[in-house]
Length: 532
Image 1 (cartoon, helix red, strand yellow):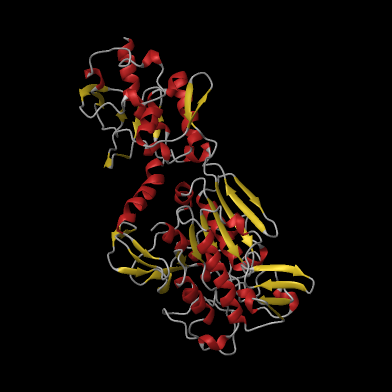
Image 2 (spheres, helix red, strand yellow):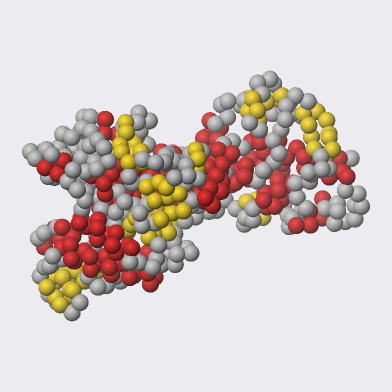
């Protein structure tokens, strides 16, 4: 009788897990597909060109430049409602400060030769679980950082977050996974009568089954693919259950599967457990299985993928919930990337050193750098320094493009000497344009104020920016692969996407961008690049 109970216990666990867990296939399928599709993708980091075997399930073998394309109207945008995102600063919150039109929110970026995946915040958190992302630069980095926080928050609104904002380093931590409430809500299309084991299932193993199925009414059938695991490789089985270790000579009892009379049940897969909260998995299995929870379920999970475990309570082994998502997104404010130091003459912009805070950058898993706007600021109050140190020379000022080139070269040398590319992926945000001068798009009397839609086509009448050429040249000289998020041209086309007069800062802002808005597309392209 004991052996029969154990066999039945082992084989019915997948059914219990299936009934309990939800959305697991969806949560991890995208991640799995992305990993599998990496084999057929070649990323030329400097140019944003990719050979893509499949994006969004569609075969695309031609070379794709993610940053060459056009803006198209898309009613499914934006990614989030600004009124529900707690991370947006007033200077970017255009709707809160009275912007009356909404059409600027309804545009998506369409590359000429491929389709980019829509941003999935939960997939991002699953893929980068326990990792650290840092945006390093000026207020345009802040624009992108807040955007990413809102996009993720919209995907997992019940996730516990910690938001810390400081002058130099700010952080946003996505800590916990979806709550029990969210999981219960996902069960709306399933009716589980636990006592009778009757379930209405819209789809099992991809096959539509609309009739009522009693999972526990059926028969045992021989199945050579069983068991799920080898007991000798599982470290969690107590001696009282380890029949083979203690001499049971036959093996046929392991080779039976349970077949309900009126439906087919999916084979247990460890990915069904991995895609959702470890805390939820543990809590539900403990409630249902009691002290025996340490035996079969987590053995099968371990045989698929190694993962740390803890022993909780009286003999119950469980996946550790301590880390959960554990994704931290930092903002490090340093507008020039190179140092500003205090000397006897005052504040000195040193084009040849990066020391302040750079040690923090080394510990990141993803780095997204940006610099340019402050190099154009004039006047000691706006620019934040009194002198420039260029080599051994201490000077009042110099050509700003030349200064930017020297400062960016120092940054490139720092990256080459300090970044471990086996641990850290490095991006450069690209040059974000302004729209103060209407003659650039053939409206000489205008600026960004009152603009309601993007420029059509894929080229900007005002031409390219000199600073963007410097960025490309410096990146091409580096030993470290740095992916250029080449956002300049696509952003030049968005004369309609600035706060203009609808921001907390006052005045007319044709430099930053509304949220929701253009920075969300930058993050969608970052998401696509990280997926390749």
